[in-house]
Amino acid sequence: MAKVPFLDLKLLNAPYMDVLKNAACSVVESGWYIRGCFCERFEQAFAEYCGVKYAVGVGNGLDALTLILRASMELGRLHEGDEILVPSNTFIATVLAVSAVGLKPVLVEPSANTYDMDPKLLEKACGARTRAILAVHLYGRLCDMDEICEFANTHDLLLFEDSAQAHGARMSDGRCAGSFGAAAGFSFYPTKNLGALGDAGMVLTNDADIANMVRALGNYGSERKYVNKFKGVNSRLDEMQASLLLAKLPHLDESNERRREIAVRYCSEIKNPKVILPEIPATPSEHVWHVFVIRLKSEESRNELQKFLGARGIETLIHYPIPPHQQEAYAHEFNGEYPIAETLAKTVLSIPMSPVMTDDEVSEVIAAINEF
Image (cartoon, rainbow, N blue to C red; front, top):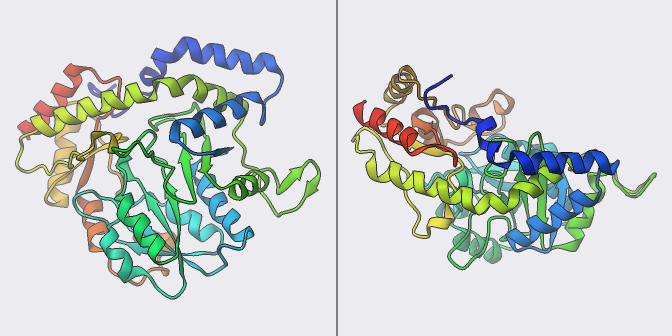
């Protein structure tokens, strides 16, 4: 095993072992495993945590985004062929959700400083068929939601959030990731800041119509058993994952704060001039540091650093090595040029970030990077 693993899921869940075991036993003993009391309790708790009215548990984060868009189409707010503005620098799930329901993704370049969608480029990307923006809080950093909200309102566009990496990220006024737009999708994949022990997802919204439609679509298109009003799918948050997430939710803010402590050390103590560090937001809680991403000045230098750290037992990953427009799945879909996304893909490197990292492990990472 690596001296400093990128992320040790067993160690990450170890502090909650007793409550997780109790939660799992409670589900088994209940005899009810799909859409029961634990799902209802977690939906309510997570909605309250994020400051929204409604939450609907679904199978995973991709389903959350897909069902939001599909619900908007069923409600007549979007139509097949409509364009959705999405960032060019994101995990491909964001783009897949748009394509899956017959909408057209239009890519918007990120800010080179924040890696999030650049609001100043929205106007250029907006066309006659543009109907919505799907903002992604990448790496756990909130987008510039004030500017994006203003643009969406001015241009009469729907606003959705991909909050899969931003559990607990908040503005200085307390507004939380997932509370800004018409609806937001969350993933509880095990590596997330709030992670399940399997796949799980959630849709948040203040719109009762969207909540009810998502719930029906995720239940085979049925509001009542065996009565199928819509051509739905099977995407439901099961009781086991809901109970485990409910047990871990009270610890989310504490674990996010530990991530911020580590980020502050990285940003203040990594002194290697070859390394470009991320910005610390003016409001620290804007960023929950799902991953800590540094940049090098070239792909060659990035690869050399990754090899250098690996030789010293420090695991790293690349988020993400191929931008969506260069994936084979989208080989013939995007005609524009996206140099910022391409540059980031060639030069970013994610170093270890976990709330259970020890101070010595953090020091080990810092020392190795400074030595490079």
